[in-house]
Length: 273
Image 1 (cartoon, rainbow, N blue to C red):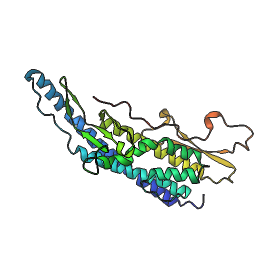
Image 2 (image 1 turned 90 degrees about the vertical axis):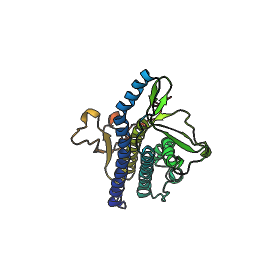
Image 3 (image 1 turned 30 degrees about the horizontal axis):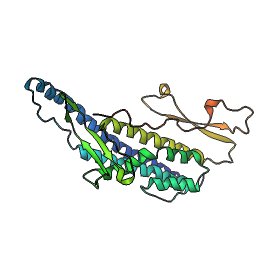
Image 4 (image 1 turned 180 degrees about the vertical axis):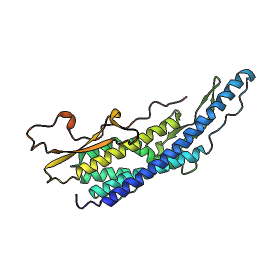
């Protein structure tokens, strides 16, 4: 639409991509630290079998700082993602109140059902990102509102566990994670969720703002993995087609306009002792 300022949209996408890269850097630093120390940890455990005593395990450096950096960048990324609602739908700037964005869209743009469904369906993991950094002990944690971080740790039976976290957010009527889960694995899941959420939201915003008077409609498709080239990894293509109510033949079922179709991942596979 003419009233949309393309520069603002491009700036928003660029700024979001930079924040996602910051998340990736924090994740990679933790992953690299874990992988570098695993041989040493294995040696300590193996040596303990003959000495019947285990010395302290090596620790990933600056673990809490990297977790805090990851969560901070992820929260700012979600702020940039939700700012698309301001650009495309005129939503007031709600900053980091992601619930307020969702409620405004439901109250004022109920004709854009796919967007409101997306915001509603992803609210739980988005809420975790919004609250988790403040729940770190170095920030504003308190009883029943804490995100605990554990480095390499000894386990019974000459075993060890990799860096992990668990949380209690019951003070804010949130859930409690009773068992430790692997930080590296969970962060990878959050990265995938952040990326696919932004992709889907941007696509839906664009499709909702195509000029309705045009004699054709835009359709956005995600390429199959076999079609994505590693040297230039374009994931989506845009096509124009005669509007279905004007076409002599309906489009095949697989040509319908739809978002990515990729549901966000849930953190269920990385629970540790």
